Length: 68
Image (cartoon, rainbow, N blue to C red; front, side):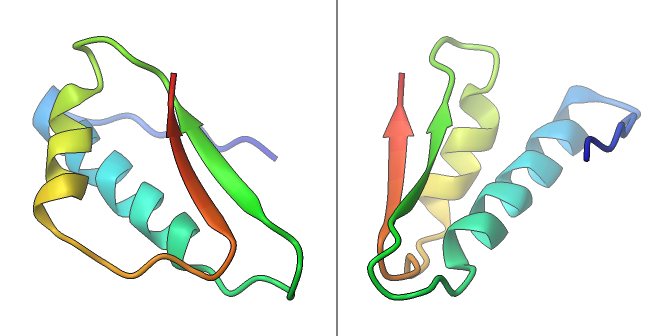
């Protein structure tokens, strides 16, 4: 199910996106069931990706973090 959220500015959007990425990649997964998140390239989402990179965290077992 999709959820639509509106943000007052691009900084808040980037912050919430970074948090969502981190939460997804830390979710416990059943053994032997890899999962991943593929992120778009380009300069638009770069602020969010930089926030993720500046706050290291441990990935859930079997998680893949891919950039296109």
